[in-house]
Image 1 (tube, rainbow, N blue to C red):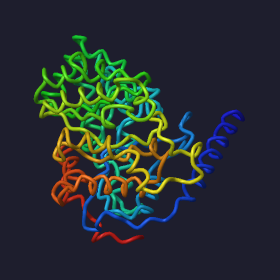
Image 2: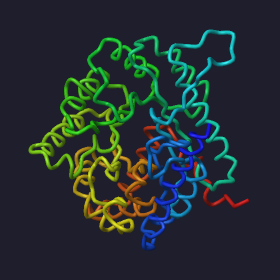
Image 3: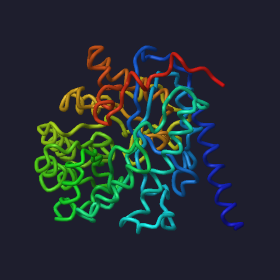
Image 4: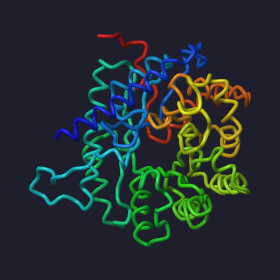
Length: 376
């Protein structure tokens, strides 16, 4: 018991130190026009995470504070499952029916639906947090995954699909018959399949994104909506130091772009694993959004050019990317990327909200309550 208290105190101390580092950021004017809607299609929530130094606890209060601090018109968010956050059941649900295999994962959807309900109340601001929920399911269950998907859907009408193995996509047995059978269920039922690229160095893009990986899945299941997270993997200085790695990444993106059922999230480069010198170990304060754009825009812009704005969506990946930037600086960075590409207003609407609304079936008009909301 005392050990648990000491660990929690250490987590809080580390988070407080990171908050102090973020607070040293130079103020920036908001670049995104106040009438441009934003959907954040990828963030996590957790409490007392054992390994996340920058944000051990990041729940509705912390996310809402970051959104409010940025000041952009974030009308809604999509929660993304976290395999390491510990949102699993330890006891079966209170029901006379036997729970489906893998029922432990439904607890994450139940908790996140509760967060969505609290957000909908309005006390934490106008943003509808967790308006869409991407949970997880063991795809090795094969066709037997269907009752588990039904349980997720019963736990929340905001359930939209699954991501499997989170940041360990290298370990997904894409070619196994059971995984293929589970993906067939996702396609038939109209659920989204989110998938990371490789994040363990050395990055094997061909293994995860090539014909024996996600490209083969996209081709075999043309009606399965696939979302490739974080530009397809932990691309950045660490990976780019390896000869031929950028060419491998570009080749894999080009292959996936030929499949109209694949969309991509443009973001995630601010993770520590990517290797950009932007965290507290490298700089004494968060870098200005122009500096961040200078470092990342060639990778972000390439992704957008390959897929087109209609299949791309900017994402925060908070609180993981919070290691290297503030919420406001990140979204300013995205606007600067759009400026660099000379994108039109319509293209920016797709990148900042439209693509996410289409993929995760969110009604922008219904969700936007920024003009009617007032603080309690």
